[in-house]
Image (cartoon, rainbow, N blue to C red):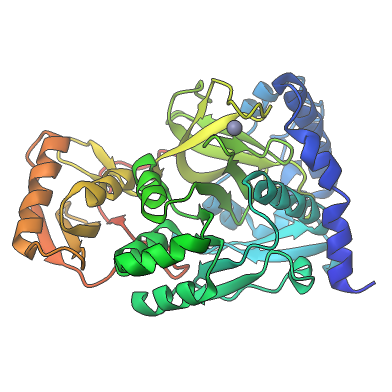
Length: 434
Ligand SMILES: [Zn+2]
C-alpha cells in the first residue's frame, strides 16, 4: 500500500466516529474522555520511563477532576528531564512522525506523534472544514511562512491549495492571493490584516466575488480583530487553536463557539496557584492529548491564557467551549505597580487608533516601554497625529500615566515561525508563576 493511501485509510476510518463524537451529551463526552485518559495513564506507567517517577498512581482516576492531583508539565520541564524519557523506547520509525515546536519561546522541542493519533487528528481536521461550510472543491490560498506537503486528498483534486509564501512583500502576497481567486483564505491574523491593508477597494471587491470563508490559526485572534477581518473580507472567520505538542485543541463552529476537541484532548484552566479555576475565570491552558502514545504529555501547559465557558452553544455540540484571552502567558509588559498589559490590549489599540495599521511593544530589562507604530498606508494622517491618537487612547484605556517612547515601524516584526512579534518584554519583576 502506498504511504498516501495508508494515510488516507488511517484518517478516513475514523471519520464516522469523529463525525458523531460531539453530537452526544456533555456527560457522555466526559465519560469517554475519562476512560481514554485512564488508558493513556496506564500506557504511560507501563511504557514511558518518565512516568515511573512515583508521581503517577497505579489506580485509574475515578473522575477527570482528579487529573488536577497529577503534576503539570512545561516545555522547559520536558527538556530538563530529557525528551527521550517521554518517548516509548525502541518505537519503530514508521509508528510515529516528528514535529518540532516553532521555538517562539526560545526553546525547541521535537515531539513525536504516533501515526494512529495523527490519523484521528486528520479526521477531526476534516470535520472542522466540512462543518464550517467549506466545500472540498473551493480553491484555498494558504499564506504560510514555509511550504506545505501535498496531501493525499489534494492529489485527487480535493481541497485544492496554493501556498503563498508569507515572507514576501505584502504587495506580492496580495497579487498572488488575487490570482488564485480563492474560496477560502487561510493564514495567521497578522498576514490577513496586512492583506486587508494592502488591497485597493477594487481588488477587495474582486476578491469578494469568489471568497466564502477565512480561516485563521496560530496567533491570538481577539473578537475585535475577528470582526475587522469578517467586515473587511465580507465572509465568516473561523479560528483554530493548536500547538505542535498536542495538535488541535479547539476550533470555531458556525456559531462562533470555540469548541475543545474533547474526543482527542482534555483541557484544564489553571490559576496562578496551579489549581483548576471554574468556567469564566482566566488562567493558563493545560492540555492532555489522551490519544497520544509515542510521546504522551500528561497535563502539558501550552503557555496560553484562556477560559472555559459554562453555557452551551446553539450548534448543539457536546464539547465544551473555551476562549483564548489576553495572549500568551509571557506576552505582556508590566506597568509601574505590577499591572500586566497583554498583547490583546495592543491588538485592539491598533484597530481603534485612526491611521494606525499595527503596533508592536517592547519593554527593556529596566522596564522602559517603546511602542513601534506602523501607520496605515491607506490613511493620510501624519505620523505625529497617529502618535498623539495612540497616546490618548492608551491613556484612556490604562488610566494611569505610563512613560512611552515611540518609534516609526516599516513593517510588522515576525518570529522565525512567521507569527507577529507584537509584545516582548525583558522586564520580569516577578517570576515563578505558570
Ligand atoms: Zn458551537
